[in-house]
Length: 209
Length: 209
Image (cartoon, rainbow over all chains, first blue to last red; front, side, top):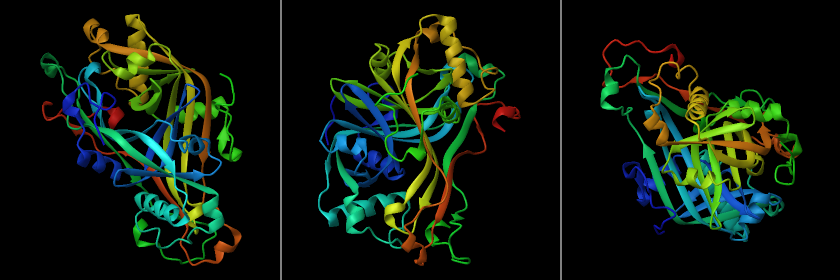
């Protein structure tokens, strides 16, 4: 991984980082990425699940997916991951902000051909989305693997941006009679809803309790 | 708005829609977008707040923002909004999925020049992020407006994709002794954290209670 003009954090350097540990921490706290690629000069941004292993992000989907068919050609791609941590309410409209963690990663993808490598990559994605699940599932058949494209996106450059903490207002605005602070936000999991077709009384697995 | 090869939903048509009402409902339930644009053949995907008014998505940020300086030139752009509603746990690895709502919108942006139009666009963004807040804040000064770029991204084409409901497994897999169902997920707001510099006893505004 290297740092160039694409990923050097240009503004508000206090918010930015090119440290790999910072980048990994954000990637590993997420499971949804937005993938950017270009077809005939038109950018596309598509949401997709991912799983990280070292400097590789695994992406998967139907073999008919336009995104995967484009990416597997090794075209320039951008994978962005964003976690929203809160709304920052300042006294001035101008200083309103968001607490968040994000990673912007550049690189290219290649198609994984071999079945056992595909299955291992799918396991990495599955475990990132819901750790522990993979051990329970009916594993992919050869036919299912054939219908699934799995890509290895290799991160060539990446940067992280993080904002935390309370609002920062202009000195003279602190005297205003305006509420200021942070509204924390997070993605929460709710109680699992069993498939109506599940036999009655089947216990919930520990990993979704 | 029109429908072309860029936005016609190609696979799983039951999940896709080009209906404007469906698209609006998803856009209006969100406040974070991922914006794609291309510089020298390299795609960039950047998270940003937005607010919708009719077929326009307002974006804003520092006048020094690379994203905004590129977009204001009217280059092709893609704005994608994704809401994660749950993890779909099927009996087979293959049929695992995600419940979600997403919109992919194509168009171009133009810079809003006039101060009163900029302020109105900022109000639209603010109200989309946290309805009711704008009436309370110290409004932007002329200097702050000058330091802020506000863009109007006009949606030329858009499509929505939605998945809801329980997993769908292959007929023979329903006999397996594997838990299946949905783990609902949603972005939740937690109790507001007052700015430590706020005078004691200032009441919480109703819009964040």
